[in-house]
Length: 261
Image 1 (cartoon, rainbow, N blue to C red):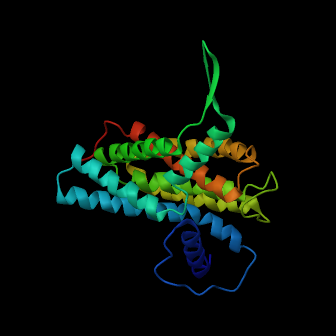
Image 2 (cartoon, one colour; image 1 turned 90 degrees about the vertical axis):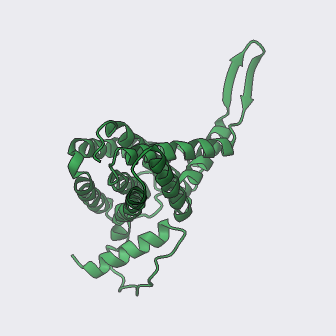
Image 3 (cartoon, rainbow, N blue to C red; image 1 turned 180 degrees about the vertical axis):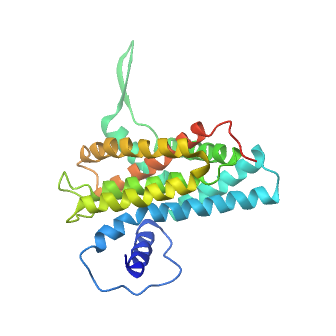
């Protein structure tokens, strides 16, 4: 394994997924056949880095003030706001826009005595609701003292993005690759390693999260293929954000009541 090539792939993936370029500029190595595969396989590492940043924020806040509902809420707000600014459309705003567009196209029919009524769901209402839900889930994880679940959740979210971006079964992959199996293998190995290391102290929950990732990828891949009107990058961003949300909800549920203070 060439560490220099993997370092550049992480750098390239960070710049693709983030609004803020990597602080250091790296020289691009000579082109090689596996560049796209490594680029996609680095998505879980970028997610893990963002999750680690969130865990550090939670730890710092808890060090400055006793871990309580108030400190957990403060940490969650800071973390989710930072993630939203850091993400290049792949966080709450991207998911809200995607759902709003999908619901707007299909409409929501409400049957009543006056017949049927079509109405659109407000994108802003969706955005606020999803934002609050994410803050609540992050806060619940932090309140239980399981900061490292943030690493698990975003690494697996990166895995979902990687698999969706490389899914070329519809002929419209965001990043067509010659060997999608190699991307799948590398992405899964990296995501599984991060999950098992970060989730070592609550291994059953971490293993369930890996199983959830497998099922979620299958479901979301079908969803992405059924939305031909969406641009591939917007779909991957939105469904990746949905995956982040699912893993955070799962963490809040699986780790509830097992605080480690």
